[in-house]
Structure formats: structure tokens, C-alpha cells
View (cartoon, rainbow, N blue to C red):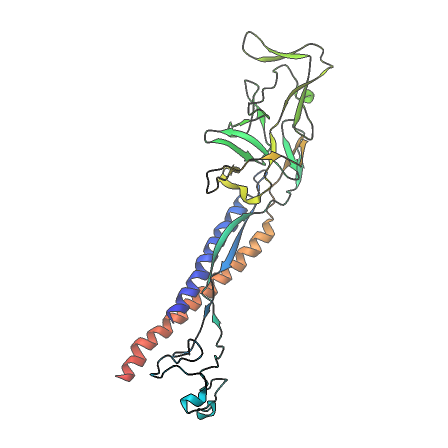
Length: 316
């Protein structure tokens, strides 16, 4: 009976954690580039149920003071000595199958769903979206992190940053600095992340600003965005703030990114892949599952109370 309490309780804990995941998905339904989470549950190993005094192995009988034997005739008995009921008999060489008992489940993994989000055209040339696989690499106080949020802007120094002020990195791991005299419509990003501006070269002026000089009809390659992916889905984990970090394995090796196979789209943002209606339906389902587990706990508790306080009193 205690086992039933534990089994029902594990189910309630699982549904509580799953509800937290769904609530986080709903809260980020409007977050640019957000990838929803999925709670993956796994069942505890089932327990094989045996009869009391089941024979542990052929030729011995647990609970019976008899020497080892090879046949029923050596015991001077046969399997018909006891009336057979539901497959049980007196044959020590026969093991009846009673079945297995489930011990509940648990959350095995919070998996990230990398399904492509819908695209929204903004017309802002500094807004970038990723179609397919890939991450933008940005510099944070905790090191390089990866994101699908391509809502960037140019700060006063001309450096491309996200809304938290983290710098977008190029393939060399450096911030990307856009010349101050380049209008937005002359800022071009190709599918592989290469950035072009107009002019022949870029130099700093007396105020320390980067300026594009020369022929304004010429296309100048300014930098290439560090646009990468990880071939193993378990190589990255969510940090928060829509950021991912590379996982370190047991040997201390950090997962290394490779060039992305996706495509960067300019003037577009990728919306969250969270579907509000689906999440709400799942939330209702989880609530009902939690209620079922709570009712099972209450029933088990009532039965236990009756066994201790009523059956025990009658027996005395």
C-alpha cells in the first residue's frame, strides 16, 4: 500500500514539473527566436512481483526444510496434491507469472524543440532571422553564448548588439563595427552572414568613429557574422535570457560549433515556435493528470487508515 502512495506521488511531481515547462513556454510566446521546451518523462524500472516462498531456483524450496531434489517423486508428492487455483500449483519446478508493478515515472530530460518559428518581416536591416539550423554567437560577461534572437541594433560606437548590450561576434570572435556614415539601406547581410557596406576602406575619424571612405558605389566586405551550429542536440543547454551555452563533457571538453547549414535573412525576425492553443490544451491535460494522482493518494491514504485503525482493532 505504501508503494501505491509513492507511485501516485511521483506522478504528481512529474506533472508539476511538466506544468512549469508549459508555463515557461506560454510566457515566452512573444519572445523573438525562442524555442519551446518539452518535458520528456521516463518510467521507473518495473518491479517483478513474486509469491511468498516462491522457489528461487529449480531443485530447492525456500521456506521448506528439505534437501535439494531433482524431481517431485523424490519429495514423494506430485503437483496434483494441492488444488490448482488460477495457475498456482505445488510443482516447485513451475514458476507462476504474477506480473509487474509500475513504480511511477520521472522527468528524464527537458528537451528543446528546434522547430522553425514563423517569420515576421520588419524592414529593419539590423534585424536578422535564421532559416534552418544555426545560432548567432554573442559575447556575454560569462563568455560566448549562442542565440536565435536576431533583433540587433547599432550602438553609438557603431557596434552591433542585442537588446541586453551583448556584442554580436564575427568569425574571428571580435565585435562587428558598422561605419557611422553608412545609411541603414546600404548595410547588407548575405545568407552566410557576410556583411557588406559601401566604400573602399574603413578608417577612424578624430572622434574615434569608424567611417567608410572612397567610392560609395563600391561594395566593401566589412565582416562575417559568426554563424554556427552544433551537430549534437545535447551539445547545448539553455542558460536563460534566450541564450544557449556549449556543454562540457565529463572529460572537461567543451562542445565545439561548426559552420551553420542554415541561412540568415535580413530585415526579418523569427518568432517563437510556441503554439498558445496547443500549450493551453496540454496545460489542461496536465491539470487533470495531477488531480487523478492526488485522488489516488487520497484513496491509498484512506485504505491505509482503515487497515491500521479498523482491521487492526477487529483483529484484537
